Image (cartoon, rainbow, N blue to C red; front, top):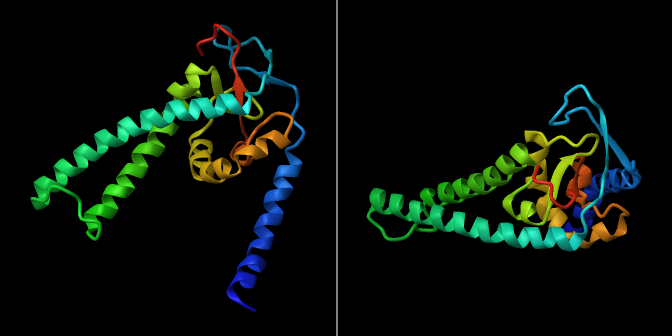
Length: 192
């Protein structure tokens, strides 16, 4: 057996499990009950969930891309300053250990950006501009740290399969399904 055949055979159980999860989550209840009302903790409210269209999610991604670019520039300036201070060079050598540390630090900053905003309010600044919010699948609460980290880890797969959201009635992507979160569209005038 050649390498491609072995790779395909080794991936079959993973793909089988992945498609089983996708098929299992194709049905989502139209109403979600939450006991975390901001005004009255004792009152249970049923929210009518309106799922976000794919084009709104794409627009929010574009907004957040500009924010991440600005943060990355600031991080890069700090990294070059530290590199210059430590080694006297104007750039970070791509073969040094400092370069790997620099890249890992950048990854932590980007993941930290998303996790902070998702856990705090359920939305980044780009999502706020387009009235989108990430909530847990079973409630309207903000996602946990594990769900946020899972979304960050699975987002490249979800973005590469971006249009799979059109196959589902709720237009949720694969990273939403696997982390048991959903992106909803907030009503006009809401800032929570």
